Amino acid sequence: TGVPKDPLPYFQQYTDRFDMIFQDDGARGIRFKPYSGNSGVYYVRSNERTRYLMSSLVHMADFILKTGSHQQAIIVLMSHHASLHGLRVKTLSSDPQLPAGFQYHNKDRTYIRQVIDGNVTPTLFHMSWTNNKGDKVKFMEQMGLWHVADKCREQSGSRHNQTTSNSTTTTNNNNNNMKLTRKDCCVEEPIVKCHYSDTPSVIPCRDSPKIHPKAKPFWE
Image (cartoon, rainbow, N blue to C red; front, side, top):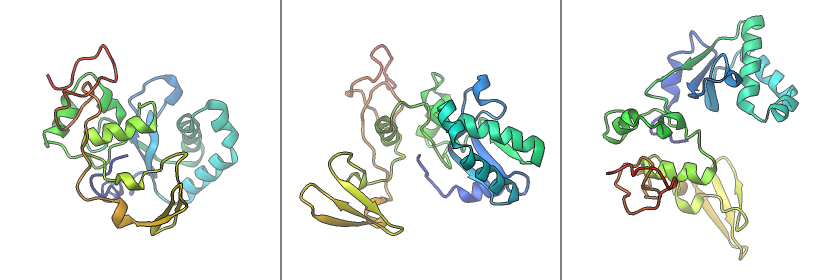
């Protein structure tokens, strides 16, 4: 998830009316009805209603395993709690400040070009609708929304990270400990790299391979 600016003030403008705020997932199937919210990133106001909801979700963890989706499970439970306990849930449909993978992968490039042209600066960009973590990072790098230094990214199988509230200790294959702070890991200027020529990018990536062989290049 890319966070170009602090998202809390944006969410807090709704807290007098709602307990939970979601991005629009983009899916309209019955599986995610009635809210169609994306559970990758969402805002929860701490109160009796939300604490009861989250406690119930923890005690119903088997439901997540059964459905195979945290998103489906929490939407079902929210609907139940809204009816019985007055839980107030809002999905900010089509909000230009809260785009997700639906907008990134949409064949209609109108919105994503507004972001690239600097006409829209998202408060938070969650790269849903993407198969794996690796491609999520690549898409964020192409959009100029990635602010984590390469040295701080977990390298599965090659090194082990131990994280505290203020720093990360990385142990490499030679058992040498490297102390990395948030200052080391969080970079002010975005990391911009080309990976695919057929997905949106803030810079032309014409020489990069396609992720979808039959797709048209994003930059003609």
